[in-house]
Length: 264
Image: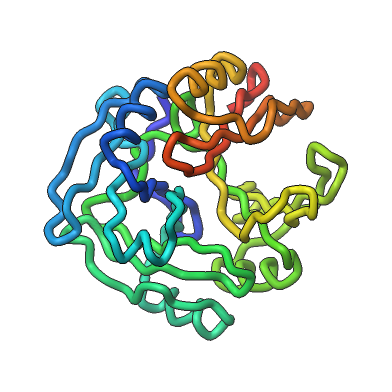
């Protein structure tokens, strides 16, 4: 069990799903990944549903209100980066060309957050932990393991995130032979980045979420049986794993990956 007690600043620590049908989403994801769902009162925001594995928090979901659905009609997974001081990091993001979609605010005693759109259009959250550090479990089956930026301006994104979080970069090849950029925190690969290609269609800049699974093909079959749609058929990369993109019944996208044996 890969359990976390804290996350270093500049590390992805949490993901949650904003959905148009929380009850249907709970049914889909609990059956797909074997999670349990616990509804937590969230004041004026309504209900925040913690999704758990073996009693440990791994991610969450919540119902989009009318205002949110007007701003973004499609459900989406959101990635959170842990920071020491969310107010300082938010101001820094602004000076680097980011747009502040939600100014820093307290989330009860759980922590403090803000919502940022990077200069290329991708949205992510900053998280200053309080009682909630982020995911208790990660990097193992049925938990998130990777966050990947899809952007139309790799150079601008590199400059923004490197200055905001102090990330370094490392270039390699993706599954189709194009460039793949790894964001490094020290010597550790903490996230990835790919340029959006014309053959992807109308894909906006976004931070994609990867969940580890034990069997990619079996997960895809189960997802389809539960009403999901396979948006990208499985691809396999040596030393990386076998992965595919799924769209859940409400329209949110996520990636599942089966790691090679001995890799976690």
